[in-house]
Amino acid sequence: MLQLETYTLDNGLRVVLNEDHSAPLVAVNLWYHVGSKNERPGRTGFAHLFEHMLFSGSEHVGNNEHFRYVQSVGGVLNGTTFFDRTNYFETLPSNYLALGLWLESDRMGYFLPALTQEKLDIQREVVKEERRQRYDNVPYGTAFERLLNLGYDPDYSYHWPTIGSMEDLGAASLDDIREFFATWYRPDNATLTLVGDFVPAEAKALVEQYFGPLPAGGSFPPFDLERRPLNGERREVFPSPVQLPRVYRLYHFPKMGHPDWIAADLLSAVLSGDKASRLEKALVLEQQIATDVSAYVLPTEATGIFMMQATANEGVAIEDIERAIDVELARIASDGITADELTRAKNRAEVEHAHQIENYDSRADMIGMMATYFSDPSLVHTWLDPYRTTTGGDLQRVARQYLVAENRVTSLFVPENA
Image (cartoon, rainbow, N blue to C red; front, side, top):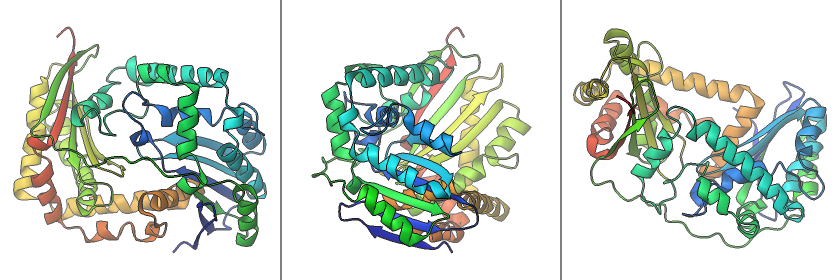
C-alpha cells in the first residue's frame, strides 16, 4: 500500500505526499479542477487555451522559460486539459524539488501581471493551428465533436470538445482571459501531488514557502450538470473526404466511479482490445468486414461516455458494420458473457492499474485524479475493489440497459463521392 499523507494549506490548496525512495526523482503534479465543462456557450476552448498560456511566462519566469528551467536539469514536463480538469506536471531529479514548486507556484500566483495581448494572440494562433492539424484537416478528425454536438443540448457543458471552436477562440478578449484565470486557477481549486524521493518535513516547508502566501479566491459560478435525456437515438450521416466508411457511437452512462460505469469499463474490454474480444473476433477476424474496432469509456466526472467505433473494409457497406455490432451487443444482452471473458477483462484492469502505479508521474496523476474528482486520494488503494466484485450478470444488465438504440448517438462518416 502506498504511503500517503494529505493535508490542506490555509488558502485551500490540497496537498498529497507519497514518499518513495526507489529512484532519485520526484514528480510534481498539479491538478486544477477546471476543464471545458466550466466554459459557457460562446466562450469555449478557454481551459485548453490556458494549458498553453501558462507556459507563456509569469511575473518571475519568462516566456517558455518553464521548459528551459526543467529541461536544463534533465527533467520532463507537460500539461493536459480535459472536460473536468487541467493538469501540469514535472518529473525532476529529487534535489530540484524546489525548482518545480517555484515554477508551479509562480504561474498560479503571478500569471496575470505578465499577461499581455501579444501573448494571448500568439497562443490563440497556436491553438487554432492545433485545431486545424488535429480536427479540421485530418480524416475523421471532427467525429468526437460531432457526437458531442448531437448527444448534448447546446447549453450543456459537454456539448463542445476541449479544443473549443475557431469562432470562440477568435472572440476571446484579454478581459475574458483574466476573468477565467481569476475564477479557476487558484489554490482552493487545486490539488498538488508530490511522489518520489523527498523528506516529507522538507517538502512541506517548501510547499508552504512557495504556495502558502497565495490567496484563495471567491465563490465559484454554478453549473447545471444534470444531463437531459435523449428521447430517442440521435443520428447523422456525414459525407466526408475519407476513403473508408466509419461508424461512431456514443452511449450515455452514469459518471465515472458509478458501479454501472465500472461494469461498462469491463464490458469495453470484452468488446474490443485484443483478438479474443467480441467485436474484433467477429468483425475483423471472422467476417473480415472491418479493419479495426474499439470500445472504451471516458474518465468523465459529471456524466458517463461510452464510445464505440469501427472502420469498414473496402467495399463493405456501413450498414453491414452496424448490423454486425448490434448482433454482438444483442448476444451479450440475451446470453451474457463467459467466465473467461470476465477474467480477461478484470486482468486487463489489474495490469493497467499496476502500470499506472509503477511510474512516479502516472502515479501522481492517478492520485491527483482521485483527490480532484472524489476528494479522496486514498481511493488509489481501493479503486480496483469494485472491478473485482463485478459479475458477468452486471455486464449483461449494463448491455441490456444502456447499449440500446434509444440511448445512443450515431455519426456515420461516409466517403463524400460514394
